[in-house]
Image (tube, rainbow, N blue to C red; front, side, top):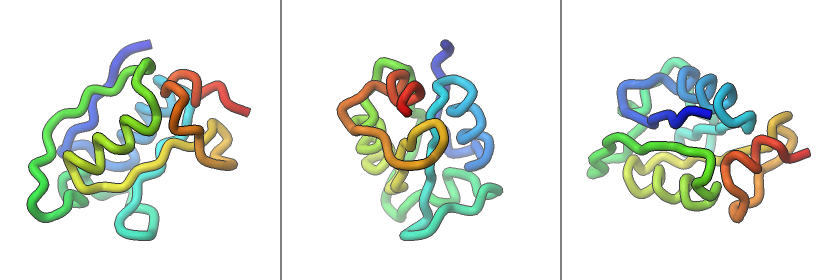
Length: 102
């Protein structure tokens, strides 16, 4: 399982596809209270005053830590959901474990 990067030049749909292929879990990206436009770049969703930058994602990172890191760096709310997108993953699981949740 390769590490992937969360960077500003990626489109929402691209990072979601990479995330799903690498870890099996579903990555939800929000723009305010609504789901972000799949064609929007992550940089275009970045909150004012946030610098963005590259965030390395690996399967050993905890779900809650990754969600918090993206919020701090980009000001973008994300949630990791179960593989079938039926509910949110437990924040204490690793990203790899979240991809195996039922």
